Length: 150
Image 1 (cartoon, rainbow, N blue to C red):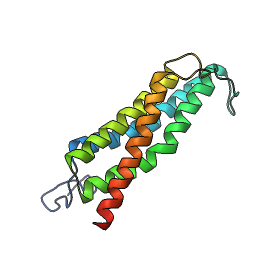
Image 2 (image 1 turned 90 degrees about the vertical axis):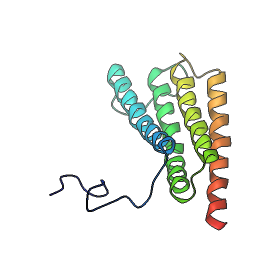
Image 3 (image 1 turned 135 degrees about the horizontal axis):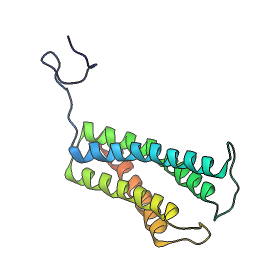
Image 4 (image 1 turned 30 degrees about the horizontal axis):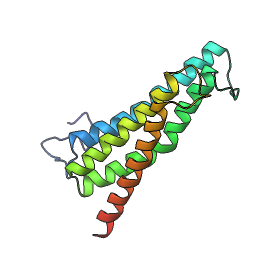
């Protein structure tokens, strides 16, 4: 009797699709960032003794944490869906490299917000994180579109 639900590989069930380790790691990283950045917001709320809302001040740690989380949540679902679609339909080294690029960009962007005392001035980490997100996300989207029709 199996204790784990399918699709855990057992003698009676074998996975029907495979995914590269890189794709799986990138998807897991995107998901982990959602929850870790959310936890950070909760911790900042507790420290500020604030249960709702944030002040729109570029040097407020709660505002910075909230923007880092909110920004990631805006991109993560779409990126994860693209990564899953591509890795199950037509995985390739190029796709894995794009997934690594966009995942590194998301981490870099989050650090570009959280690693600085204020959002008042742009910094290189935020710039390159955003650029990598836009380029990597667009290229992943085009790749997914190509494999859908070709």
